[in-house]
Image (cartoon, rainbow, N blue to C red; front, side, top):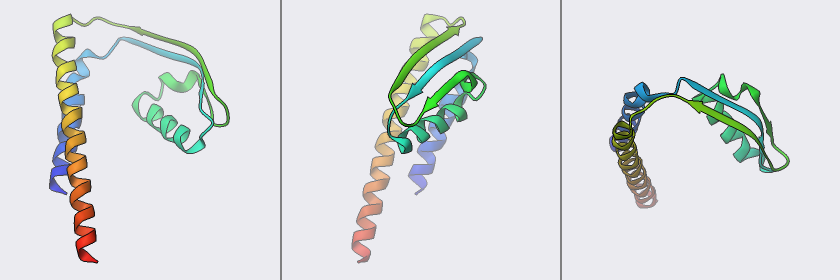
Length: 115
């Protein structure tokens, strides 16, 4: 359990450290949807959690495929900074996935041994 919490803290710390590179303008509009309500609900919740103001112009469809719209991102970021944080992000995501998989396997083993 401690490993999972520690890996989650590392992932959140990485995302918060990269906030200096956030774009000045980020606009998203259009229609987006897949015909699976549960998965679409998860996507919608994640979108409203990450960028609530930007997805106000997006119409989410829970019953049919919809992929129309536009995305505008404006800002300035040096290539070296982008490469550095991109590499850190890839490594951190890999570590988070590995830690989560280890924690899941340990949980399943403990659950099976308790039977």
